[in-house]
Amino acid sequence: MVFRKRTERRAAERAAEKLAEQRVKLFFASDGGSQEHPICVESASLVEPRSLAMPCPRCEGALRLVSHDAVAHRGAVLRAARTACARCGAPWTVWFRIERPLPN
Ligand SMILES: [Zn+2]
Image 1 (cartoon, helix red, strand yellow):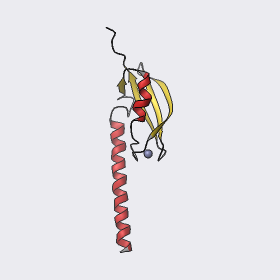
Image 2 (cartoon, protein in one colour; image 1 turned 90 degrees about the vertical axis):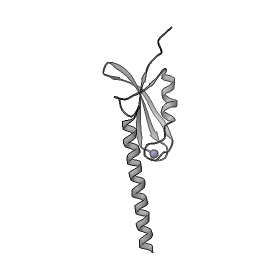
Image 3 (cartoon, helix red, strand yellow; image 1 turned 120 degrees about the vertical axis):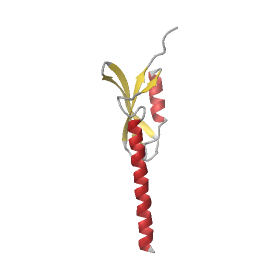
Image 4 (cartoon, protein in one colour; image 1 turned 30 degrees about the vertical axis):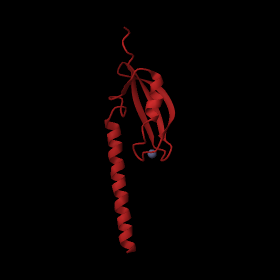
């Protein structure tokens, strides 16, 4: 029975790892996960709350902000919210582009 329990635990761990891998892939493929697909916001003040509202892609823990940088990318200036997971410590950079609404 000990052996079986261990096998079950390993299977559960493997499944959890697979799920985490899928969430990480999804993070990099979705808006904010890369410089090519930044999240568009109207103001720089939204960068920090929007990035901190995301759960850690790996463990779903809370993110904390490490730094907030302006980064030039293909003639535009992007904002990079550099975060780290408070639970597992994994670093995540969330990308933003500031798009001010056109003045009326
Ligand atoms: Zn985490």
